[in-house]
Length: 430
Ligand code: PMP
Image (tube, rainbow, N blue to C red):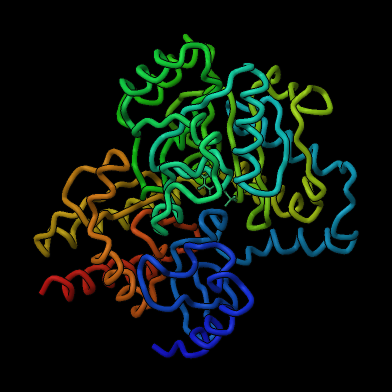
């Protein structure tokens, strides 16, 4: 595979962009080798600067549920652009999208738009603290909630693959207010709550973590969090930046039937444009400025182009429930294919999946939390990643990420992914 143009660009990028990239995981550090510079994408395919074509399973880390360059979204953006790119003033489209989100996501009665998932989670924690007048919050090890200072403690995603879970620049004062518990472990949450009586504002969790690879909640875990929060007046926040509008119209909270007090959402709302949002119970959301005392703002929040893309995306998802059946079927086919491959090859790697999120861990232990996930052989993952890439299958470049499937994948693509998976693992284990 010829990738000389990408190599040249990466070299050139080093002198003007730190590490040559604008977000760390893109640099391929954890899998080694040279990142690919992307030129365009359409449907299920992405093309790099050397003209190579890939079936891609990242989908901009989630938002391209309908595949790339969706004609309806592009048309909406094209129309909106003609009326200027930004006003910094309210628009009717913001009400439309807010009403749609409120109707789709069970926990959301009011919603505030921001520009990224990071902004959404930072704002949600500030609001939970302001609302409860408490300082600390509980974060789950291996969950990633963006790069806000207080979340960069035992964080997943790029923070773990870069080997800097506790980033320099995060002060001890900040870190001490973030309490940590392993995923799927209610006892440790109870202990933290007991030891910090009346000082815990919130528990924030990815209901189905995608940032330590895909991990599922054990039966009763999310319900357990709900009842602890009810008992102790703690704000339960589901970070559904990845799972929102993906696992179901109403996200993981709809799928599992557990309703948090607040929800953070991200990129999916923008259909690929930079967007985030946080929402929840009216009485909590009314604590946000200008109605309430907790300050949060944004010049480009509710940007008309992002809202046009998002409104079209969410309308599609809302009006076509068959999309979710399709995503689930695609996910199930890939999972089944992977499992059959492992069986044929006598391998025992762990696969976790739900709907259109799926991870294969290079370990034979059951993966139920971050500690389990870290038992994976990341060197093997790196080899697997590159060999899949050579066959034209572009996976997320880290063991600690989930695949994100789109409805654009055809049966032919699925067959190609499964065959490549078989060939690669066979090559690696012969
Ligand atoms: N929360 C979760 C669950 C995420 O997966 C991410 C990023 N993938 C974020 C928050 C941060 O979002 P952003 O990168 O848009 O700031």
